[in-house]
Image 1 (cartoon, helix red, strand yellow):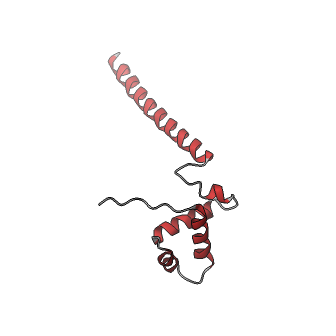
Image 2: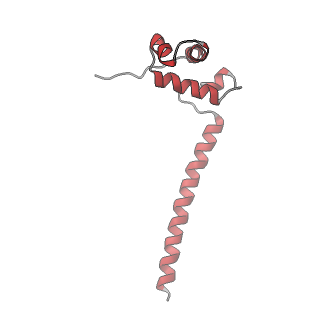
Image 3: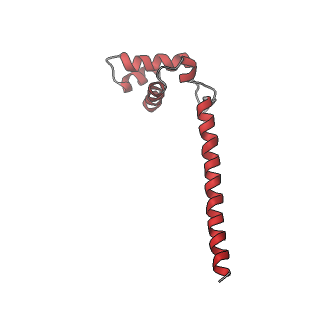
Length: 102
């Protein structure tokens, strides 16, 4: 049996976060009423708090698209990992040839 991943609209997420933040109910009760997992709602809440002050479009960009800042950071981290691998290789090669020339 193949379970299709559920997708929620930006408006649904924003409303769910608003309910979880302002209601007297616990996060688990709100998530049960909305039919989403509590850890999913907790993640949405954390994401909206982390991006406070941004527009609704930027809080939940949707469709797997990253914000431009996140794309740049991801590319820079990939480049940094590659540079570290090259540096380590060159260190080992230099040590090998230094030992051989003695």
